[in-house]
Image (cartoon, rainbow, N blue to C red; front, side, top):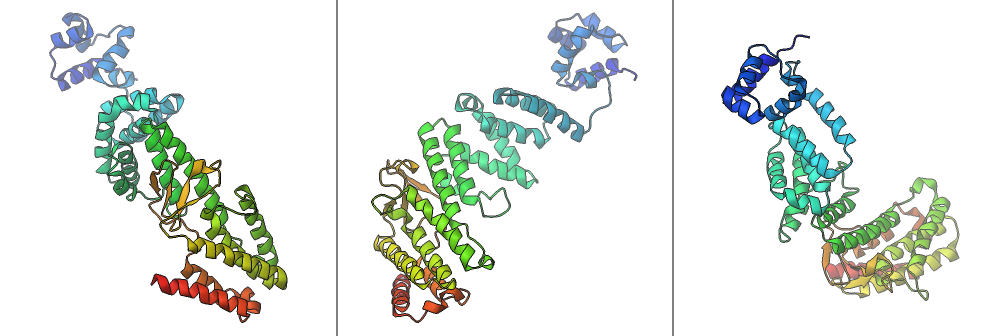
Amino acid sequence: MELKISEQINRFRKDKNLTQEELASALGVSSQAVSNWERGGYPDITLLPVIAQFFEVSVDELMGSERLTPEQLHKEFDKQYSAVDDYENRIMLSEEYHRKNPNDLYYDLALGWAICNADYAINKNYRGEFRSVIDRLSHSNNPYDVDSARVFRCMVCGDDELDSFMQQLDSPYGDTDHIISYLNNVRMDRARFNGKTDEVEICDQIASFIDDCAFLDYGCPDEYGPSIKADFLKSQLRFFERVEANGKIPAGWLGFRGRKQLVLAACLWGCGRNEDGWAAFEEGIEDLKEWYSHPCTESLLLSFDGSLYGGLMVEQTTRAVYSKDGRCWPFYMRLHLGSSPEEIEELLTAPRWAWFNSARFDPRYLAALDWVKSLSDAEE
């Protein structure tokens, strides 16, 4: 391969609007040396990295090798990025590639995530650059760049702006199945990014609560039949032994357990186990009566002694939890408990639930249904 280093030095020097004397001074060599290089001579090999760094190019480019395509550069960058084991060096590597390729947002994205993931002791030194990255990515035609910019903005926005920016975020999974957990993780990243260790701990406790809600919300398909579904529900109901004391559970879980008990009752009736079905049904109605007896704005305990979830409490509306210091932590989407009066009424009346048929005309069933309908009517 023919080396064209003389042509490259001449071109790069002129691109920077430098004279031979100015380039020589910057590199610490004589102007005669620069003149010799541009007339076909070769710099000392030890100077090649110095000259390449000054012109912000690779040694291969300096020597006139064929320029890499953007895709090849991305691959080269990714290899180097993966080999670096700390975020500060990843930041510097991304900065270097960005300087050489200022119009390629691939390196802006890498730089943004490197700063975002760095500890507060490091990222606090790059806040201005981080905001510039956010601005550039916000104008990208790539949806992932724009979504990342929204996440980055949540890291540095003011507390009074956070709600607005959080509500602009979409699930990275392309659906809403994990959006509540995802938004809490963003909030946890914001706390870590800003060095607020107490908030990181609260977000971690909220994540445990969300995971437990997801476990309880998961259902067994009706197609498996009432017997298998009943066994599945019993295994879920054992969850409440974790938070139980003296035969009671904290009020924050009553809505979940009440609905589960009603579905279990339907399954037991579907198996012909009428007595067990009525026991589950009556327990479920009692849970729901206590659940609805609390004002919808009241904060309800999730554990009696605060040993679980760090003393978090939940609103009956499930639109927020409160930490023990009184701060509100919104979910930005309704956390599904499936136990509003309307949902319970639908459960008890929907034709789909044929397993309820054997009990539908029993006075106890009709009394419970009338009570639920009265709650629904009162909310209208």
